[in-house]
Image 1 (cartoon, rainbow, N blue to C red):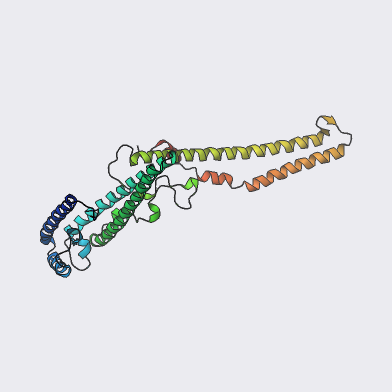
Image 2: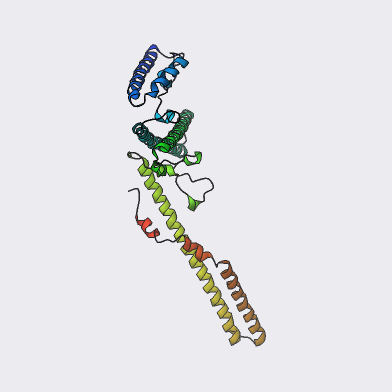
Amino acid sequence: MNKELGEHSTDLQRAQVLEKSNRLCRRVKSWFVQQEVHMPVVHSLWVCNSQGNGPLVPAYSQPLYLPSMVLLHHPCDDIVVRAEAQLCIGQGFNLLHTIRGHLLALAKGYKDADATTLPQKEWLKCHKTTRDLNKRITQAKNYYRDVRQHLMMLSAKTGEYSWQSQLQVLEDSDVRRISDSAVGAFDMEQGMSWIWYAAHLGDVPGGINEYLRIEWCKARTRAHRWREECKLVSADMQRVKRTLDHNANLWLSRAQSGMMGGAFIAAGEGASACAKRQAAIHVAIKSTFQHKWRCVEEWISLGETDESAAVDNENPFV
């Protein structure tokens, strides 16, 4: 019943839709019979809704009057409220799993499209698939927000908010692929969205866990490259300082000996003054560099923590 019947639908398709509608209608009526045992107020609400909308309301449009719908105006049993809360928590994790699966499919589609030159027919097919996946992601995202809103209403009754650490508020910027960084983030500040860290259902070969391992390896490689570059910068700074000290001492020794490049200079005072001038220039350059680099070592040490070595050797996704 997700696809609407068109004017070209066959009689068999119409019969199948009618059969599914009748089956769903019977299930809804059976649900109302069971619901009246724990929520007697539902009977009056159902009668009022049937009289107001008439008998032609399709089964998939019938309100189920769950506790989250009637809790604000009618009291409900705590057992029923907790049962729906558990149902919403499961739906939330299932929707996050669905969103992640669609994002992985999008990533694979983009990767295949970039790697090969597709003909016109295949490109249109890929474009249609991408559009359908984006539509499904939007539907799952809106459904997740509704489920979380229901959970907030139910938690006000039960007083349990432990689920908020996993089922967080879903913003549009949170729905992104693993390899996509947040808006405005630098290369070393790349971070996956929280939806990839949330608890998820079982994995399949080539699924979420494999992609998380790949991203962990990429992040570890970036961290190692960053440390190596920091060590190279520190080594170059020390090399420049030692070179300037060596040149300054060399010019001072020449000034004291009165020798320039191994040749005796008759005008010793002029040569000595020139050598001292060169030594002073090298000392001034070193002082300037020391002033500009005074915070570099501290900045480099900010990225070195006691836990960095443990992180290098542990893969949380194994």
